[in-house]
Image (tube, rainbow, N blue to C red; front, side, top):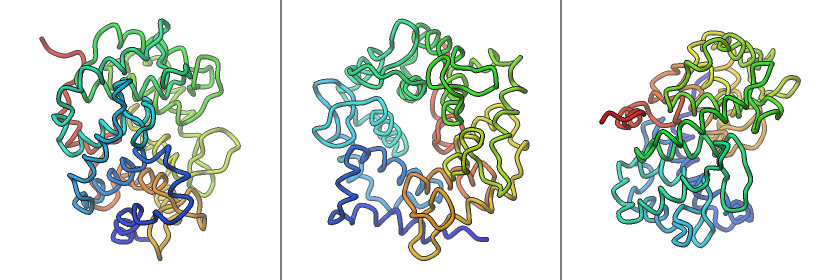
Length: 320
């Protein structure tokens, strides 16, 4: 089965034209994330010019929350670490971090101030804690090249405490193992250069991840759950980071992802014959990239950015 590349490009290009639909306004709280998902899908298909660069950058900057210092998901929304990462990723994709200008110190302060004494991060001022937010904050600071030893040490300790007896990771210490949490915890340790802390647990974690593949080739997030295209990213990334990507059946997984395409409108869904969306489209394509599919742009498993872009980020700890 083929990848309907041109249809997927058209699908992403047309997402912002559906302002007359209720769904468009109901997803306002995810708009900046959605722009990143769509743009990243285009970059992986080497079609980034399908978006007008300056228009995208102007939208990103309009989402800045001047009171908090970070970025909200839409203009006049309050800053959150998730939308802040999307803003930084977009600017990095466009090689335009300089557009932060004098705002950068406030942005860095916003991110660092979200860390709690136990090393975890809140998503915003309301206090929700999740290992996702640790990863998100660490990637933000990594791209901005503003990591420091105190931040890194606390984050490392927290995500290690999220590792469970079965080889999975939870959203907080003691929480149920979930593939998405495995990705964010492994991604955090990878970015911080701390994967050696898992040496004795590597096989256990790899086994738990490989067991996420079900009979039809798809991957699920937890035992006994249905497969979902987005886990082609959450599971495969952890396996790539640990060097065990060959522990799943690549051919069956490729076929599962491709079977979730809409061959009329473009886009990829969570499961065959379901409604497509930009979230599953980008992570389906990113999963195919990790599998070395056709001529997709190679993606970095720790950042969900093109490898060529990640190569320009200074590794932590920084050389003095």
